[in-house]
Length: 290
View 1: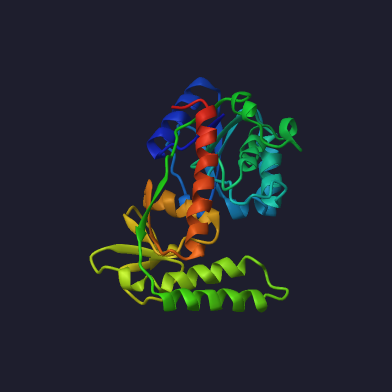
View 2 (view 1 turned 45 degrees about the horizontal axis):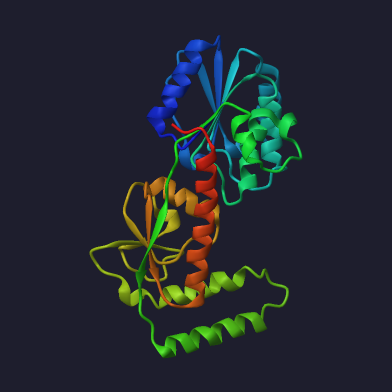
């Protein structure tokens, strides 16, 4: 059973219904530390944090304990796009011990449609091993999705001709000095450069989020400081899609308001978001929805 996009109360209802319809004497919940759930169950429930899934102190004990009367809840454990990652493989060993499993996730993918195969591997590793994503798989298992529709609105920020010239010089310098560095450092550096030009657009009565604390303003938070719901204007997007997705989940925002210049890097950011959104919407359009 795979359920995507549900809130805490909705997930609790799914767990309640499953427990009432199955003979379960213990539940295990695998979760990620930033989003620890709390389920009310009549049976014992044990929580295992994502980083502990691979630990010996859990691994062999859980392999001995888990049988066909145990339920495993996998709650928000799609934390890397690498389907062969060790943590996933250890989780598969647990999941193979029982037919009772509920997989919860906020978004159906991190970035690529093939990310959905991670959730299908949790459901039935052997069935989907080595396979790439196909929309037909959305109907091969018990899958229901509550769409999390995200949109992006741009807030124009004017820049001068001098700003544009300095940006082009920065870009040329980064390419000339790339050497053996990760090529992704170039767009990351350019986005920070563009973000610095947006400081003049920051208003004292609004909340903002940026990649770091370089602005030294109380109303501009870094992504790792976002701890609850809020309406934030984005100065820099996070360079990791997973972290950006976490931000959307924590903040509860369905509309991203993005300070946007006419520089090429901001055009790239907007286009990449549009492509990600299109991949999400394509899955929502094909899936069974709540």
